[in-house]
Image (cartoon, rainbow, N blue to C red; front, side):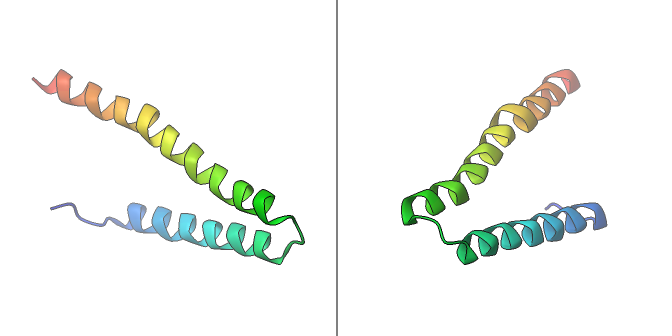
Length: 67
């Protein structure tokens, strides 16, 4: 079981706050519906790509070096 260290907790709270501010900013702007949805979803997709191709590569490298 993973422990929730203070560093992970601070990062989680910080990212949640930034994300909520980002979504609320686009909620208050007068943009076309499709453009607004696109601009909200793109950072989520980019974050998922960074996670999959960046952090996962580091984890896989650490596992193979331990053997």
